[in-house]
Image (tube, rainbow, N blue to C red; front, top):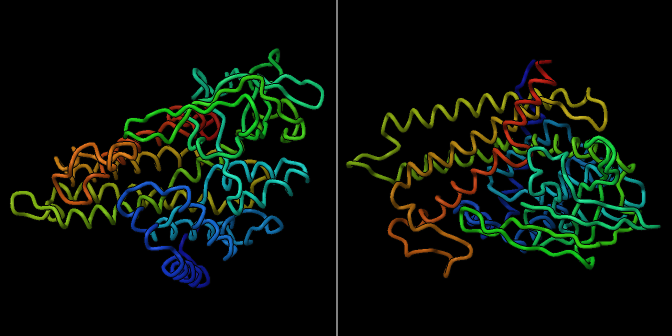
Length: 400
């Protein structure tokens, strides 16, 4: 298998790179380079710049706003976006619920929701995990009971990322409590303004409040917001999680972070020597780069096989991408912690006064590194923990 880019693909890469260089607002780029979170307004602004170009949802079908690009061009696009560096469009809409709607939803749902996802007029969040139902997602207990033309939803979701901004939430709910646990689940779209919904923030280890608990107390949801068939939601969830795991690989993100590691290590001196010149540190960086190149090759092989896959299914190799991608992301933040050393102690927090828990004692780039390190601990958990991914690989690929 030849994994080299063609001349056409290389020309496309140059076009994408040039667009990002010219169209990305400098303030947004600077925030990402510095390790700060992209604000809601910044993400909306950038998404609409992409939409005006016709690139907000390139992997969607052309009839719903997609570009018709090959999987390889989509990969190039995402890699260049990560290395610009630019924020990716909101994953919960573009990569998760959007593909579920255009693959399994009805025409009314497609025409109602898809255009507003593409422009970020609707901000979506994901209602999957529950207390006691994280890695064993199929054990979820949130109930939806049919009452005429509505479902009445009661229960709780947790670790709901950016729910404080959300207009809509896509939820897995139990509609048949007597069926085996995977068979009694449905996929509902719920307006976050519906009476009975409460959002409560959770402070994370990095000091931020990007995740939340979401409570449903007699929340009435129109039956027309059911995606696909009742009690078939587990199938749609597996499809969604397969998409999420491919994107969690984030090869471009790790490439950009390695570039940043080398840049900062050239500024730091230890014992009169630049850190980037220390053999032990260089070996650590090289080891991560080798792992990243192997991940990139694996992702390209997965992409090359996409055209042969049945519609609505995912390659179980996406679990490999999730495991290795998350491990490499964590390794890059560990290298950044090596670089920053003791200057990481006064770290930047979105909720602290003036954005910091203490005054800086080192360079101005130091204060965001510890929060990024702590926040990245989660990537081996969300999207299905790496331990669960190993079980999937054992069953679906190795046949054990």
